[in-house]
Length: 605
Image: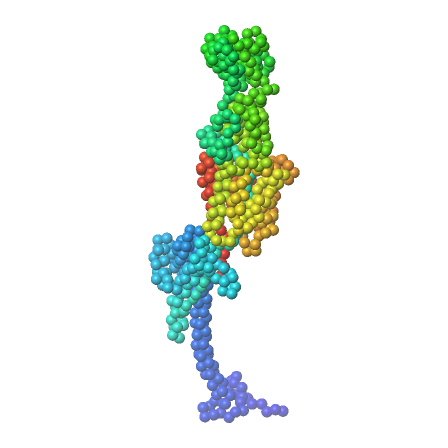
């Protein structure tokens, strides 16, 4: 059996070590020594941990300041790029303002009241370290790493670089490091765009230059526009027609003796004005129903106006006999000289009276007879008070309304028909606005319609924007087709954007209309034409192509254009109808400038 040592110190275990002078065994002394060493080691470790914590705090602060400055410089570069359209000075001022409004490090309250003071403080502190360069970013410079081309006529990029060397350390100063420096650089630029214009060439784009616009734009404005257009065609002369419409004045037979009169009859449809070199004896009228009415025992001198009375009131006159002096037609008892305006002979009578016999009709579609028929008919010409009246003014309206296509009246693109000319002028300005800043934009042109009623790609996208300007200028309302196939124009433009867009370029479709969709690939239908537009908008949305829509005039389907813009994340602009052309022009100019200036921005570096 093992000998057991009894612990006489309570719960302290028995030891075989002999006690030292201090009364502690060897193991007890070792334990005490280890405790002292741990305390010393812990103290050193606490110092190291505090140093590491201080280092971490300073590093974290440096990273925060660096991130803040990066963010501020990026914002300044983008904001400055957005102001390049207003010039270099505006771009640089805006960049500095954004640096001040987004300080690095500790937040600083910047409001409108102290903005200028903060800008002054910022420039005093960092002006020497601030670099602002305006030009065009060229990725091919510096061996392909990219660089700024300075001194270009139409800058599209701004470089912002700044160093800040006055940010304090929290704990680094214990090691002799008082301040640290951060640096950031960014280049902001306009993102290049691929733009497709979709223009309305439907027949209604002439409406503001026709008589139907009298009620909205005023007679004087429309007449002045028509006269301007006639002059733009070179003021051609056709027979003896004057610009202002006049009734037919038909000359009777040349007198053979002193007792025979020289008679003129001015034809006004339901009345005639009779002139004779001798006193009038009687006048007989034959009406459209074949009835005759004789005005006898006249005491009216040599001139008088005659029209049906009683049951013949308001009836159209087909023939007139004028008895004056010794003339006699023999067509009835006492019937004088005969003037025939019957529909069977009216066109030949009119051509002779207008001096058009032997005068070629000037264009490839139409005849003098078709113009005369239009003058006689109940239409906008008659509503304007020009029925049975002939002149260059309503010949101009006849072409605009009845023969507007390029294969009918080819020269109409040269005249200032409205509102299509306002649109052409706005397109010119749009091209100018886009070219104000060198953003490597491209532009193409689609129109609705084609000869078949579908859309036409007039110009593929290219940097030659003057081609778009020229083509648009050389088109006329109803150039190819009279109806309004809005969806077809969208379809052509979308396909061009999808097939030929550049990687990294923003895509944009600008759509304009003055009317209602009334044509689709199957033919005429307002409902299906409208649905076709919405279907095309859905395809644009799927392709991520925003559509900027412009509703021009009171006849435009503004709700449809708003739907298209909303569906595609675009914007809808309305140019009201019933206002002077100068106001329409100004509104369109403002719209196209806004679209041109709304350039997407990007950080290049």
